[in-house]
Length: 391
Ligand SMILES: Cc1cc2nc3c(=O)[nH]c(=O)nc-3n(C[C@H](O)[C@H](O)[C@H](O)COP(=O)(O)OP(=O)(O)OC[C@H]3O[C@@H](n4cnc5c(N)ncnc54)[C@H](O)[C@@H]3O)c2cc1C
Image 1 (tube, rainbow, N blue to C red):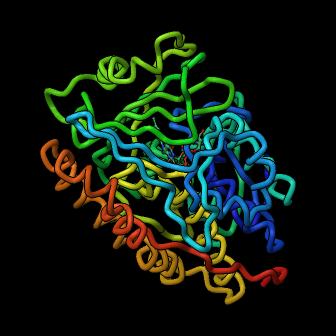
Image 2 (image 1 turned 30 degrees about the vertical axis):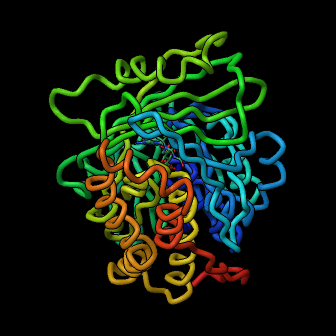
């Protein structure tokens, strides 16, 4: 395969597909590569925050997602002593006032399709092993069903999620970062499912939490996530130990899938986000919230920011390292304070005695909620709608 693109995006999860969409919307020629073909599964809690829905709305996808997703209006938090605090989804004027739960098999296929419909050329089953500079741009090398792949582009965007192999190969990450680990499975025939996320600190290794996210037709995504440390149980056995905590809901339920686990990168605060003619988006840049574990929102948002920055770089005819660094600057302005704050909260707040103490306050005064909403600042920078003129 020999072709020339403005941008080659590696990884077609939410980060890669949103990058491709926002670039093609401005008239750029984009290749969107993934080692899988779609639809494909991704181990996840399947919860979409209002922030995620806001970007998906910008992509014209919200009406169709509302039809296939389960709407969530509140969060129920159970602290270690069993006390429950219920809080509505925080209302931010620029975001939808609700969340959705949608399997990643459906969600990622819809977002990828949107990028393709907007003009991105999707190249599936393409496992990328390296990216080299060639003077004019980059050459993306890998293989597709036993055949070599060579894609040329002016810039590459890496959107490979928590899989750090390509980043380590390219020396963009010197050592693999410390990761959290999470696991999930699905149950059917779950009784009494309501319109809220259930998050629980009971019987889970802290800092971490267990969850039950309601889906349509009595289905639920049930999982657990925590920081790995020596002496801790495996994430699979920790999830099995969590099931009894929600046994009332599971009385007549059946587990319909094996437990699957996957690492989570939350190290954005210290992570590299760019290189020569390269930008990193989504979880490849460590963009998963260290406190809540949500990353689809940051994946979509960073894709939009990357597209905006690349559009400016192409317009200026400046693809220098300094110009790539402006993307890092934008991300830091947008997310650094949130990530540092949430990392501190994760370490300092998620202790049994403190959670037990704070639960009644959170329930009655929404102290934590308001604090959280204050720090969880938004991005609503409009992408200019001008068409790109090749420089
Ligand atoms: C158990 C669990 C539960 C979670 N729950 C939630 C939740 O409820 N809500 C939420 O917002 N976030 C959640 N997250 C985090 C969320 O899943 C990720 O942050 C999100 O998927 C990141 O999106 P991404 O596009 O950066 O990467 P991904 O979605 O991981 O996509 C990366 C893509 O790159 C492809 N790829 C990788 N390497 C290569 C290669 N070398 N060549 C070609 N293609 C490649 C992969 O096939 C994949 O399609 C959870 C994570 C886990 C593990």
